[in-house]
Structures are given as C-alpha cells and as structure tokens.
Image (cartoon, rainbow, N blue to C red; front, side, top):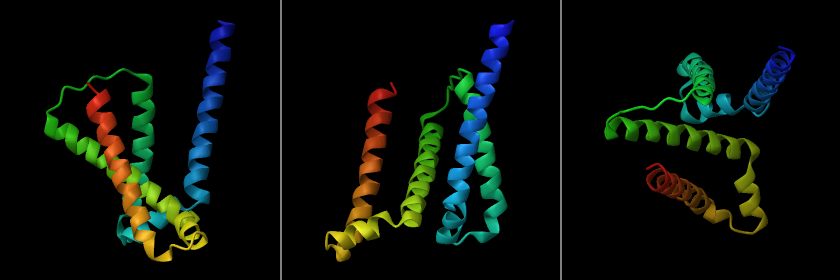
Length: 138
C-alpha cells in the first residue's frame, strides 16, 4: 500500500514538473503567439490553445495505454502529415524566436544563403521522418 502511494506521488510530481516545463517552454519563448503571428491566423488563437491542450491530453493518454489503430493508409498518411506540419512549424517558430539561423549565417558570412539553410532543415526533417516512418514502422 505504501509503495503504491509513493509511486503515485512520484508519478504525479513528475507529470506536474513535465507539464510545467512544457507550459514554460511555450509561454516564455512565446512559441504559440509567434506561430500565430507568422501564419497570420490571429482569429484562430482560441483554436490553437484548445488544440495544444487537447494534443497534450491525448498524448498523455496514448503514452499510458497501448492503442493499435487499424486505419487506411490515406488516414495514416494524413495523420503523419499533420504531425510533420506541427513539428515543422513549431521548430520554425522556435528558431525564429531565438534568431538562431540569422545569427549563424551572419557570423559565418553567408547572409544571402539563409533560405538554403532553412530548406536544408526542412528537407532533412522530411527525409528523416520518412526514413523513420517507412523503415522502422513496419
């Protein structure tokens, strides 16, 4: 009984710490507002917030339970595409907020090649995701 109570408290504490870190990451860096600003979709702000909350909740549920979906390949492809869009836009907003690539290209003297850095990252992310999805999923 005591062991189960201690495990419950440790799990709850870890979940709260992780959730607080996630919220701090999104809030302090201003990822969601910057994403909304870059995509010019200010009128969908409430839907973004609801989507992030629902996604975090669904991710938690899926992490603790084993679900096996039997879905058509078209639905799985759409699901993967939406995941890729979210991760790509989140990564782009994060790098834009932190100004990582403009500073890097300025320091190495390649200001005119900034678009090529972004394209290399996008194509590398797509290639890596497809490689992992197609090779290791089945």
